[in-house]
Image 1 (tube, rainbow, N blue to C red):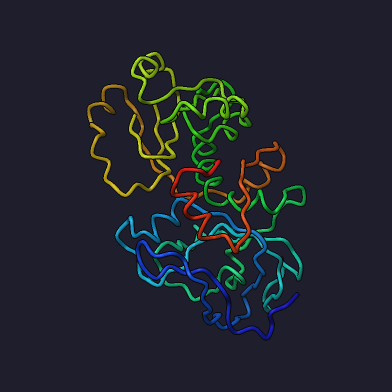
Image 2: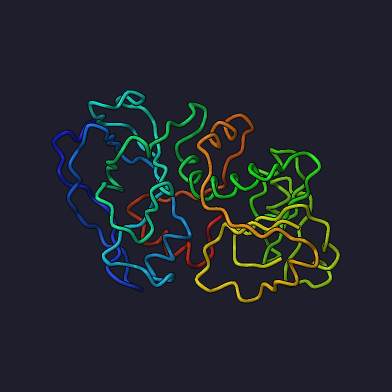
Length: 292
């Protein structure tokens, strides 16, 4: 499998807000000595993809091509590349190069072509279809937990349950809906609360040592890994000052996350769709059908 003679790549592009994605063909970048090319075999949909194609952040530059959670097999390596070889299973570290609403000349989707610094090998015991999500939803939640020393004895509030449990912490799930409660217990959460239940929230007030916000919310140490389309208007300075709460944001992490996931068995719950059904997949994501 090689694209050494390929000069174009195929992708699904958004041509405007509210318009369905269309199959399109564009030019691949020039292949440099430090470049790697890989053929994409799996990809996953991120919430940021929806923000971008619907111009939720107000920065979309159409036509735009989203989709940064991709896994593939190396088909070509440059003269200066020493750590990768043909047929290696890899993924891109997209957040490292900030693909949202920027113009990059590397190909994507059917083939990815870019600098070797942005590519990581995948542990042999991790299935490709489960690996695609790790360098977005995975790394943005793993990173703050690791940097802030979450360990046995910590009690964290988070929707990303598995990292916390693998680090030895008690995990409290805060959700907007009741129907996920059974799912959370299957993922060995310690506790579950619906944020609209005032009594349940009051009972858990002051019980956390750390909290990761993977959606737009506000309240010990709170790390925001979501990128909402609205400003954080409801967070009062005094609500942070009075309890000496640390508020932080997190955007990136380490590739060591994959090693930790392979060792501890952390893996996402996924729904699989063929690439030909990408339009239906995007709509399912918008309708809240993704798990998770």
